[in-house]
Image (cartoon, rainbow, N blue to C red; front, side):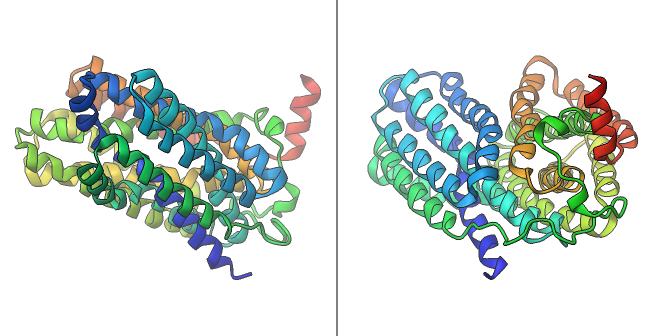
Length: 399
């Protein structure tokens, strides 16, 4: 089988899952129709992200057992059903349950499958191929922005969920049929960090959770994601309140961040293949820390504002492409679905922490705190050591 067909299926799936980033397009139409408060409607997005992240643990384990095709197919069907049911929502609870919970389950069921399959097919370029796969997710909001806008304008906000749900279901299920694991997993692949043959390092989730490296990486992932989502979630507000831009000017940051986010996933993923995961991660944290520190000073005009948020989006994208690869490097590919599901919980938690910080702290203090978190992540990176089965067994026996 041509392994690039797997990549095509992965990108097709991820672009549809990434449409969740375009949720803000539904906010005002739902407010106008039902009279809900903005803060109440926005909870739908946070709930979807948290459910989606949590479900990746179980979906990853399931796809490790039965393969990515069936799990992604089931996930696409659940996602489509959840979004279509949202068309019948007349209360906030119904909206939360249909779109947030059922739709979130569908996204979580599907998300790990393309990543897992691609990493297994490309042991020689994991960072690059992970970057391509997750770049589709980053671009999903941009791709679906005109689509969602068209459906809302033509059919109304409630009916638009029916058409969007059908679109999700058809395209995700189609992409899922291209997902397949290679005949043999991890054979002859040499881990670039210390030259150990990969088939000598295949950790189960239980074994992974008993290594110190997992927790150091998990905290690093959390801190990097907090910094990125802190800016991404309120980029427009930063432009208006800190830089004194018009709403239209500040709104341009949304598109710029999305493009740089997708580019960072590919470019930094590729760089990690060439220069090493840890070196590329360190560079990303250093750059993020410096830019967040600069933003805390508030000395920005329009071009500098766009440049700052672009760099943050670029590095944030890199985090999301490198951590699947480093999980495979450190813990093998046999259980990459479930192992990365546990690692991905850092991102799920950051979806709440990042926006929360900027709600309780002034912008300058929030950015300074984010810069400090990245500095801590740099220190943690120095402590991370590649785990091996011998040390793992020693820890298990001692326990």
